[in-house]
Length: 110
Image 1 (cartoon, rainbow, N blue to C red):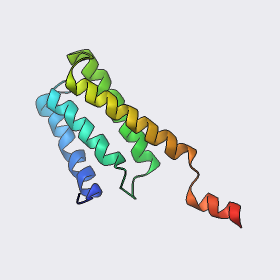
Image 2: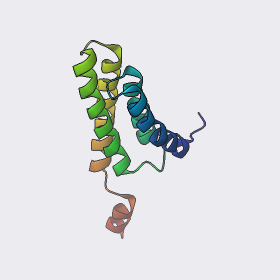
Image 3: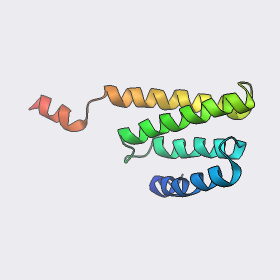
Image 4: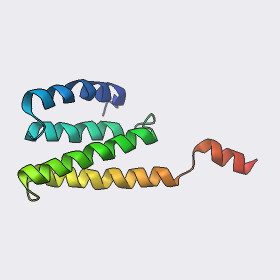
């Protein structure tokens, strides 16, 4: 993996609004792009992923999952994929929220 997280985020920030406008909010490709954008925000190997990135990933997936369930139903593969990604993103967010920042740990040692 090339680990070009910032480039992926920037690309998705440009293309997702275009997909929404051209294809529509309810289009399968648009919904899958939401999943790709959320993945770019929360990549496990990305040292620059912030708490805000994880929160945005969760919001993006919550919206996408809600739309997919309404439009395609709960059994559709895109819906299932978004639901799984949402669960993973929520777990990552909760883990990060429960872990104090490194500078707080350093102060406790001193």
